[in-house]
Length: 378
Image (tube, rainbow, N blue to C red; front, side):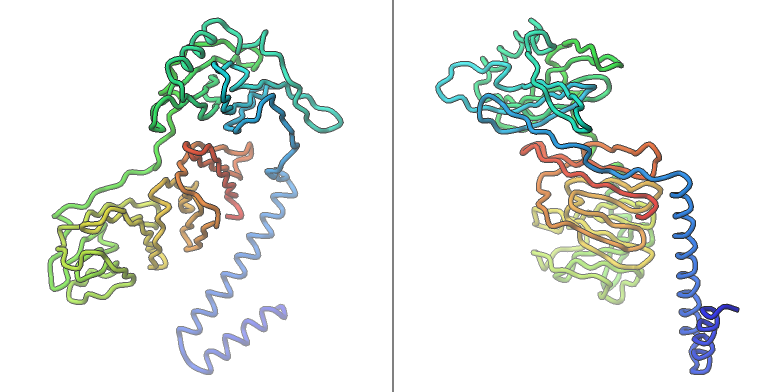
């Protein structure tokens, strides 16, 4: 028996001598957990030595210059092309030209670094007659039109312009891109469906009904026979026991209307692995509250970022949302940066399947947030 095992056995024997079966079991489980973690880390190191690891990193920085002062909006790469989109406020200039919105560059590798060489638009896909006509009509009829985003998706290049007061009032130009990325042809200005963001959730919210009510001295809503919710008596209460004789629970926070009944609040839920997500609107309140109940740890956290967007991590690891993540084991983190207005945009997976990049997007300000999740290290 090794010295480490001798020490572990000594600790267990000491716990037995002092009495207490709980301590014995806890020490055994802790010891086994540490041993399993060490073996897992050793196995992962062997895997990395055998197959290697690809890290996400910046391979180059590029400086792009434009003729006029502008507000950068978006940039997209396809093949060796780099299309930069921006908005220029022209003042006394009567009309907006294509070069006032787009700059095209060719990526060239020099001395193990990338540079962007400006390209004359006259012989490119931005100088096609039909596109020029549609572009001029856009800025003729919508004086306050402005570029929102550029996207390459499903073999198409898309350019979205806001034409009204609402962010949803858009006109989208689209081009087809050949498989070798060398031939680009203009299609039309009707690509609104192609550029729509995916659903904010990859799961369905289920609304509770009267049939879910459990009556008693302190009635509550039964969610999947696992967690029990109510907003009566002046507070929102979450319980993990189906007990209507006791108004106490594992989580409480105040509500505005102290006199609401069990039927007044709107409550929805979604089950994601061992997590139950709760979406609650107490009576006479305007803002939904979002909470996460972990059935493994029996803990509750309020995470209102879920209201903007929420996506499941691979293999039931947990959830990710603008500004943070929550794992099935109870690990939970949010970041300090402002995530107001962020929506889920897309997922990019690494070739080895180990890393997943989640991209969130703010349509109003054109901001992107990138979150890289490693399935091994979690």
